[in-house]
Image (cartoon, rainbow, N blue to C red; front, side, top):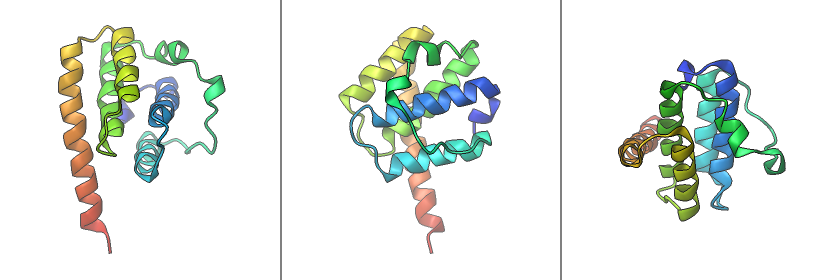
Length: 133
């Protein structure tokens, strides 16, 4: 929904960031994979076959996002991912806090973005139930 507004470089950076966040709590499941697959479809990029955490550099990835609009899109979309499994783990919270601090976004805004992400993830799961055979 919002990811298509990112520039090409930002889309690839977002995908790396999403994969890192999905794995940070040590529980990377089907729900997270489904959301990341949906991100790829929305952004019009091929889903990666491998994510190499050793090559991941958070500061480099976050530096790819220049505008406040892009930064807010990143946070909003990541909130869907953290809430998709109904667990907002401490490690996920710590990472999102680092991202918000790096982006210089107010922590109270993170709370509102989190509420939005929780609602969207719930609606996403409901929509999947509606279309199941």
